Image (cartoon, one colour):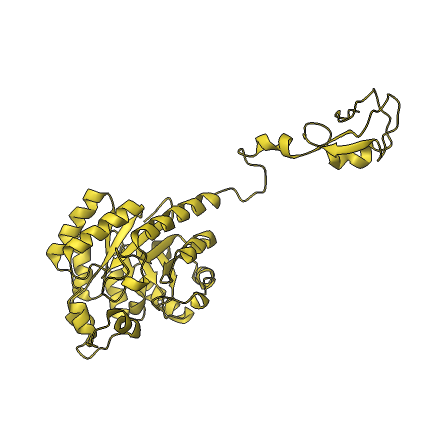
Length: 338
């Protein structure tokens, strides 16, 4: 998990609506956008939720049916083992890495068996100690989202991972707000830096806002991982489509992040870059004759001025030049020499 650049995870999640054809199209869109990973969700509805579990308010709003059962909703969104293998093959064909979040014991073991490179812990599992222990036992790097969590809960989850075999250098903690979509005033992006300062871990951001501005800002602040939901069409039925980017927006986000990476990759020392040195002479000014000056004349505020180009005496030496005598004749606009 030693990415040379910011790792971008395109969260397909359950936006495949249970269709392998739609899932493959999501892979193609993610690959075209230039992300590093396309991520799905691996779960058994019967292991994830009880039959009495209700949908979240945003799920009821986005789906718009009369069934309030979270179990019924998730049962339709399961990916079986054969579908996983087909998706992995399609990812390889498209030149993108496959990833999935496991939500239960069986799914975690299955993901390990098919060789995922690291585990992604979703926000809802951050207080699930048995789950965290099982993932830590796999000894793979961990990326953990922290939606709905406070600092103490994050520290407790990190400690469980450490006690069960995952060192801090193999963790990345993502700031996150679990509201779909997240209103801008609740993003609290500086909390990402608080996590870094409090825990001494690599940081990132899992975004649920509308638009692409906040992930880009997170990269400028030091995020090493960005996760963002995407869909082929926000008007499709399903719980997460409306809080997801469409393909052209995902591509724009990736390009902007790559540009920001370049913009913040310098030494941090303020000095002229190689790209701008050629413009110094053009943009800066020199001390020149404001009118004809004869040899022996005293340089004054009246017979000197400052004009481009900057290949003569710098105006910063103005006070040193005033009062000296001209060593030769100077025509108007001619660079002053001493």
